[in-house]
Image (cartoon, rainbow, N blue to C red; front, side):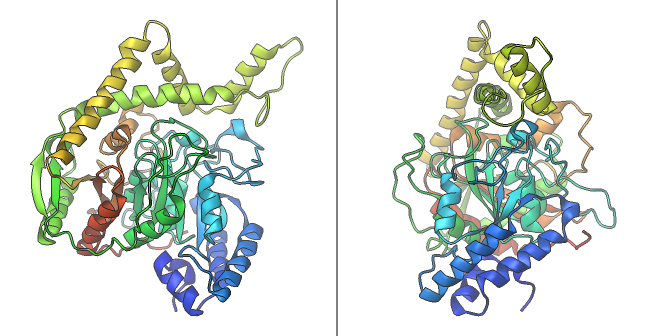
Amino acid sequence: MGALNKLTISDARDKLRAGEVSAVELTEACLAAIEGAGALNAFVHNTPEIATEQARAADARLKAGDAPSMCGIPIGVKDLFCTKGVPSQAASGILNGFLPEYESTVTRQLFEAGGIMLGKLNMDEFAMGSSNETSVYGNVVNPWRRGNDDTPLTPGGSSGGSASAVAADLCLAALGTDTGGSIRQPAAFVGITGLKPTYGRVSRWGIVAFASSLDQAGPMCKSVRDCAIMLQAMAGHDPMDSTSADLALPDFEAALTGDIRGKTIGIPREYRMDGMPEEIEALWADGRKMLEDAGAKIVDISLPHTKYALPAYYVIAPAEASSNLARYDGVRYGHRAKLAQGDGVTEMYEKTRAEGFGAEVKRRVMVGTYVLSAGFYDAYYNRARKVRALIKKDFEDAFANGVDAILTPATPTSAFGLGEMADADPVQMYLNDVFTVTVNLAGLPGIAVPAGLDKQGLPMGLQLIGRPWDEADLLNTAYALESAAGFVSKPVKWW
């Protein structure tokens, strides 16, 4: 048997149930891999004691024959999820020392299903970023390299730690969150599969909020099947979250037949961007042919308001962020600035927030406060909300006309070097989300599937967008694409 930490969830589940391996052995293999991967900076709070205790409990359940699919599976948890008694900082200095007294709904459900937490994963501060360079813990490094070039590459963001950890086999899967592409873009950059479910499919309770109408938690895994298994344990109605949908859950794994004959896949003409690398264009054409060969009908479609998606997103998301982040003031928890004699509560707020927040978070809070201010609310925020409604209608029209899923590139490029965009206009960085933000604005499910390597040997991904609440069908289409692409490449270990 190869290294246990390299197993997929489905393979590990079968071995655990057959008694070929124990949850403790699996966990120890992952903990050893984490210990040897400090150069990646993916894990920022290790929890080996919790992991070992959970692994022993999982072995007892396996022995008793009471074993859900996630039982005994070691995972990493993005630092955005509140985990009881374990630092939950959202990679921000302002939450330094914060130990929640409660468990997020998603992590609680995964632990109840027998999942094992190896530790907390690095991310962009408050999930604001596309390259994992805004974290108080420092940059995460992509386990992939460009050929023989040892330039450190970004794993994408904001779920960069989750992406890097899964790609480097430090854990079998990881939790991510997606506000404008933060699961799908990093998944594409590191050659793994990342699923953003329909808004409301997975509870947001206990997840540190960035933009409440856009945030959604999802699985980041080594295969489409693993995403289906993990989503099953994560999803479901939660009365603690007013936006959580009270809908019956289908059996996501059972939907993976790979048969997509008769399905209609839309190719949106607006996603052909000026200056898009030929390799991304060729990958998209290959994906189209793969789905056609699998029996799907391919049609060209129009999503006419796509060009307004990025500007609308970068009004709505910062506006919601400025409102959500107003609670971080140094009064009840987290960082509090040292005050000079005579300083009052206003000075405490100002100094604490100036010290605690990083530059990108400050930028977005200021943008958000500006667009919500008197005199600008209608000009920016209300207009962006109207554009969002039009973007949503574009997708509704496509689905009403018989389209079952939409195929697009996941990212405009492969992974770039850390620091390469640091001094650029921030808009250049925001353009990394150009193919993904529409999905969040419309509340739809989307999945990134690795589909090939570029000429530098770096992974590239394709995105499939599904009908609302139809993750089962989306996962099946992704399964067919995954099978046709046959992507099995792994990064060469250097760390």
